[in-house]
Length: 229
Image (cartoon, rainbow, N blue to C red):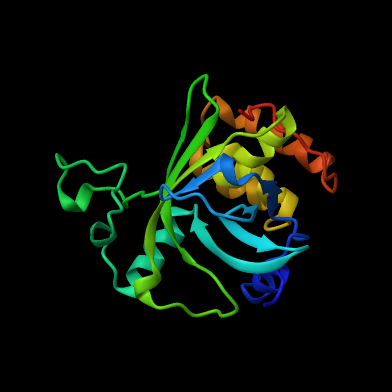
């Protein structure tokens, strides 16, 4: 069997990409996947839009693994393309409002992240599927995943794991755009700030925040003051 690095490469991913948020070995007793505990070594590799949980042996021999999607647009697109209804796999929208007319309803959001207050665990519910050395998967492989994950052994690890398994908020996305070089400073101000919070008291704050990030662009050790563990 190939290494898990090869499996990630087939899926267009690498632990060396800028979009990697965390890349840690997880003790098997620190993670439950749909109530099951995997035997063997477990690796958690988190990206901006998804994260992978991989079981491996030896140095990096791939045994089995899953991808879990964090981006709700990707989740909706995947379900639509596979012609799978969320309710058929037990995936519930977390923002459903039955009091609103269909034309006023917001797009459904399925990704759920919970942090036990004062506790030791994160709980994630989302759409995913098993992975392997292929790029196409049967629609029947799509399923809901409920993951219970220990937060981490130290403060740095907690921050990295949290960023790896949760969706990014507005300021996280601003940081991502500059860090990954997706759009320029001017484009970011014109689109995110102008359209999302333009004209509000947050505009100056956001502008200064982006200026600070742009000045530090290229550093691999940028930290966000709003990060939580």
